[in-house]
Amino acid sequence: MLAGPILLLSTVGSALALSSRYPIDAEGKLVIRQQDFTDTDLFNSCPGGPGSDKLERADKCTLVNIVNNPNVRKFEVLGDPQLNCGGGTDPVTVTLGGSTTVTTSQTLDASLGIDVEGLKIGGGASTTDSTATTVSKQVTYSIPPGRQAVYVAGTNQQSQTGNVQVNYGDRQDGHFIWFTNAKVTLLTPIPDDVEFDVHESDCGTDPRDLSSYNGSS
Image (cartoon, helix red, strand yellow):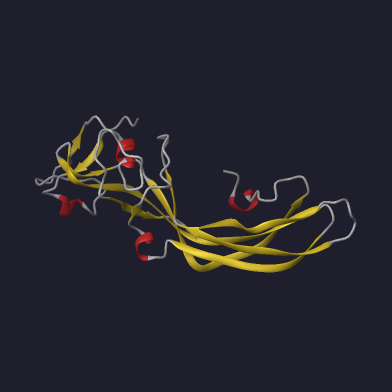
């Protein structure tokens, strides 16, 4: 549970506060209140979430106070790995590749113990750009003895971080709109910006381990 209060937006002053980091009331004052629900309840009430026993289900959740981060290229496996691990001494020629669908992903920049991947959070690049792109390609490749190989595709993705604005159809603790303190990072695929490579590794290791491309985290 977060120790700090959650910031809320007065309905009277909402038009003035949408572009601001912190919401204000009709008199231009910062609105900070304590309440008996947390960021976890707000996220869980978003469309696609499991719901909260303290809040009704939200009409929509939107990324706000957006900060554009450097783009991130994420590599994924295309098709099944092919092996030359039978103890022979000759290379084996195989066909590598296949297809995969890359979709917008989202991660929570806080330790709340909840999964935000299934939540429907709009706003940012995911609103104007395609949230899914299909990547497909095959190649012929010669695998040396004692090695295994898999084709990989790295899709460039726009990274954006922000708080989440949660809109309700009825007032929740006196207000229609609440904001999370915790931030979410959205990665939205950029169509046609894809790099391909053959990932080769030793037999006996995980051929799908792409930590050398995406980092070990």
